[in-house]
Length: 206
Image (cartoon, rainbow, N blue to C red):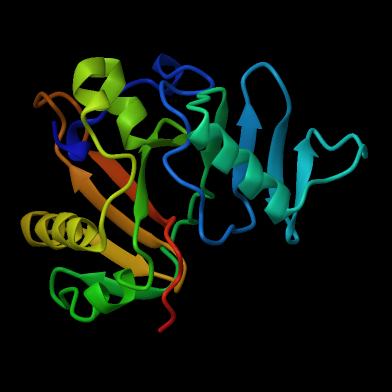
């Protein structure tokens, strides 16, 4: 099942997902969200994590959130979840299109050894494995939690070649892929698909 085909209502995915977080981000961004089932939600703002709604009870640090996500992965605890910040109307960073191609992108991708792929579903960005599990849980268990740089490059280069209106952007931290997919029936309006790739492996420098 291709990630492009993942069109499920976000409420079909449990609050904590079917799986633990796919990876621990190498770097967080303002607007990222972190939480756990039936408990608090935290949103990153001005380099700290504040509760939502912010009741003034305190904040978390990047290190605390990293440790919690790492613990969730090590103990296979799917109560914890992470969701990257969604980009604005214009994808941030260096812009690539079908006309310009994706030359040089592979070099940037190799700065980290693993990338987690999130796909927009409704107003959320959810891990691919959790969206696949809605359709086929057995298939989802066979998917890797993160992707290699080569796999990410293959996905992006294929989509940008096959989808005339595809756009790619890399802002030095995260990779964004957006394209318009035709509706499943002639009556269905086209859908704008968004994928966000978050580096989760150790940074290797420029």
